[in-house]
Image (cartoon, rainbow, N blue to C red):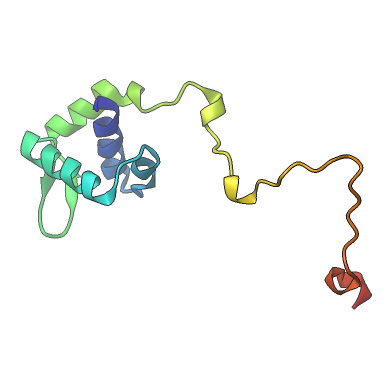
Length: 105
């Protein structure tokens, strides 16, 4: 949970997108609850226009910034499953139709 809180504070500090929290499996509702919890804990302050870090939040972030960095390089780039192709046999021959080839038009 400390990693998620540190990540939230870093996102608010840099004014970036919450997609990284979605990557860790949080729903938008859970992200909202996490923001509310951090406001109550004094790490964040909110007016009607924006959410910013308090001094306590900045100190917490500096102490836990090392939790955000991912040391495992294999996790730096996600696998793109939607464009992954199924393996085909080496004997398979693909012959596209002439309608799909742009140089025949």
